[in-house]
Amino acid sequence: MLAAIGCASLRTPVRRPLGGISGTVLDASTGEPVGGALIGVRDGQSAMSNGRGEFALAPLVDGNYDVTVEHAGYLPASAEKIAVERGYYTTLAVKLIRGPDFGAPAPPGSSIVPPVFVSGPAVTYPDLTPQLQGKMLVRCVLTIQGEVTDCLPDQDVPELAPVIRQLEQRRYRPALRDGVPIQVWYVFTLRFPGY
Image (cartoon, rainbow, N blue to C red):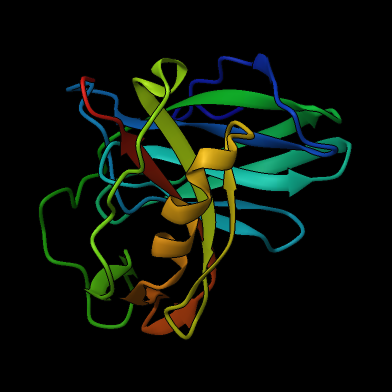
């Protein structure tokens, strides 16, 4: 593990047949969330942290994964052999250290650019039962065409089906790495009324 990543390995049970890696990316000096960080594993899957710094790579098969985290202006970070077990998410707390070029514009074509919302419905919530009050995370794939697919809520709740359909009708300008569109897992945070 390099100094630029703090790894708090916490296993959280999920109701899914496979496991995954989730967590939050923070600025090590301020503690503020870092959105737009690219998180990758050795098999080529990648995720991008949202505006709250949250990310998820899922589903992943059982095994140990080498994780890398990149963001313009920060030192790259990595951790080796992060264990993933069926039915659990391993949670990472990533704290990125600012690099010497923090705040300077990135050279053209050499940056990571987060996805940008282009069109689609606003998320509206169905009538909710009391147990759905609060916050829920939905992990979706944002394709290189800007489509939202393969959404997985962190809980199996039938009442969320209309919300998932709304997310999957949205379109985004895709995430870019060095000017090339990339497919990423992206976390949408749903905040239910009263939260």
